[in-house]
Picture 1: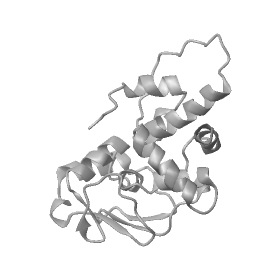
Picture 2: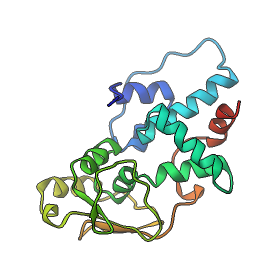
Picture 3: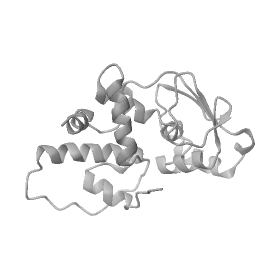
Picture 4: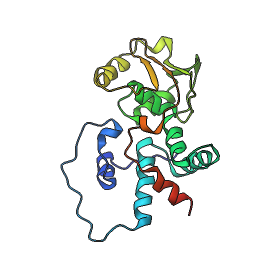
Length: 197
């Protein structure tokens, strides 16, 4: 399986991204050197796509599949793409506050610690639907790991489309998020322009 092993802060710096969107509180002291040339239209479109892929931890092929799926759905392709990315199971775990970063959320799902509607799901890219109940397995709720994570993520705001119960380590997806509820600094229209060439 392909894994992106680029240092996170270095990648954030090159994409002009605040590490807070990844759940990381650290800041890099280094400054990116000023680029002499103005970035081309293609360059800005590519940067937006790389930003979205990096934030959600998705590689090129799955990202292209999400775009194809979003293109077939009703409504705006860019908005549909962001909703699909936001409704991934690993992202839902991150939004619930059960993981410090999306990478950690992906690991938690991969270790078979999460159930969706009572069934164990170990696929981080699983797309949740409205009405789904996402929870930690009953026999894993007492793990010290989750107590440590909840101490760190306690101040994080849970989005309005999720009804999180941190006491019982579970959440209900009230509805799929709208674009206004997704606080990710990505201009999805540039991604659509890039793929529609």
